[in-house]
Length: 408
Ligand SMILES: [Zn+2]
Ligand SMILES: [Zn+2]
Image 1 (cartoon, rainbow, N blue to C red):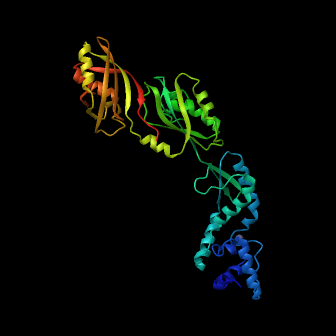
Image 2: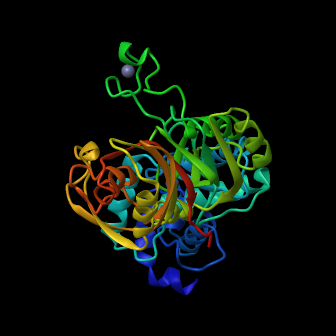
Image 3: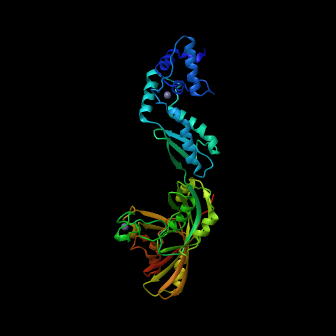
């Protein structure tokens, strides 16, 4: 008789006599003796007991697992069928066990103080996986599986959890009438009501939806999420090389979508354009959102007095590496904490257009309120362009020309 059976003799005898199936009996000592399945280990225990003249056969209906292991081929088939319906480089199978079974198992573990015990869930996962593997033709991945099939052992049905795909790129926004992301209706929060003409949103489309809806369809996914590296106001354009973003598609049944085709289709309209699409890892989302990049802006300004060309140019030049204090603007006061932020104007160039209008091009720190820098926001932004010019000015249009971000 093997030493480990001798060591656990009384417990093994008692458990065998309780009528457990071979799987369950073997699993109570599951971590002893590698290279052996639990049902083989269970049979070994019974044979060893028989040599002693103790007959302790398994009952027809296992009092612990209720014969769930007889269903393994069905579970494996259902899991394989579900996984084979989606594209992935790898997979993992998990299971959901009836709470009563888990409870009973826990009771046995505590009663007999079983130290080398393995859980039924672990055995089910492994045994279903073994049977399913030849039907799936993809490797098992434990750490970061692209698709997890969760088998509910009560009904043999399978829920898939598919890891999202992340597509990075840069976008241009040429319209002053669309937001960056979906803007749900504040009355109905998306359900559709008279206020939003049944659309559930305040704007017909957005930078997110133009590309997201196409990507969602191509990937046969569930939902799209848009992570921009900051955002511009609705009435601002995003020009130049564009703003970095990551598009996330949840539950994609196809993950190797053709990004050239996505780019081509997303670029058919005139409101927004996309470039440099590539697949990235989830980590990119935090990296993009956390990036504090300098920005270059172009603004068109109206002045409430006669602007002298030379004075204008001198004021613009005076904003070279100048720190400004910006108290939270009045227009965003209701949604952001009221505090003073220090920002820097790196450089500023002016172009005189008429007695009461001019253009500015300027580079600023990330997070600078440019409209308020120009207007002064009634003394909340100091120093301001209006203050130094001695004429109250207001930004009419604002465009972002560049976001200084180098991809690592
Ligand atoms: Zn059993
Ligand atoms: Zn509504």
